[in-house]
Length: 239
Image 1 (cartoon, helix red, strand yellow):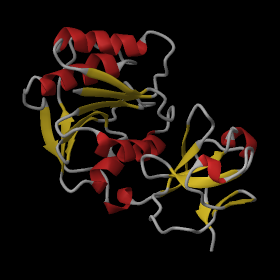
Image 2 (tube, helix red, strand yellow; image 1 turned 90 degrees about the horizontal axis):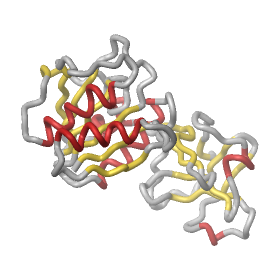
Image 3 (spheres, rainbow, N blue to C red; image 1 turned 60 degrees about the horizontal axis):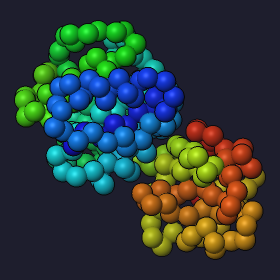
Image 4 (tube, rainbow, N blue to C red; image 1 turned 180 degrees about the vertical axis):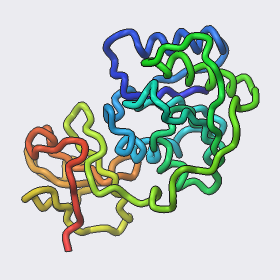
């Protein structure tokens, strides 16, 4: 199974071209569009969202991840094996959080000359063929490397990392089940709820979302628009 996780969005031919490359290389392998609205140009934020998503991927799954504002530059292209799941994409921090939180992680620097080499589309020309090679059971086309991150990469991120289509704003915080402190964003101090209906329509709160992250929501409303939230907006726990 290959899971596609990118910031490509759904418009244009980009996702389809990656699918076509994979269908040609590994026609029997299932390819799933996991997420295509990772925070655009924000690998550090996307890294926290991916780290929350990856534990739900089955062991042996290959995550082809692309948030790559430095595509075509000298940034590394990498493969990471983290707790039995394979991550293929740019070495720009996108996989650092998942790697740092894994029980075991191994890194490779990709050394492969693409047959087709667009300087602006490594998702199709480099990462998809490497993901296909791993899916076929071939050796990783590269050399082992030390993880480029330190222990700090495993820490939570006290900021908004993702805004979904409903306007709910996920943060990089992983609250404990017993956490009851208010979550502060700007001048707003939000109490915890368990589900949207815990507050009246139009009221804001925070809850633990389905992947374990503290998320700012408005019951039947658009929290990001109402509260002025975007990727990078800082948040904090109340004292």
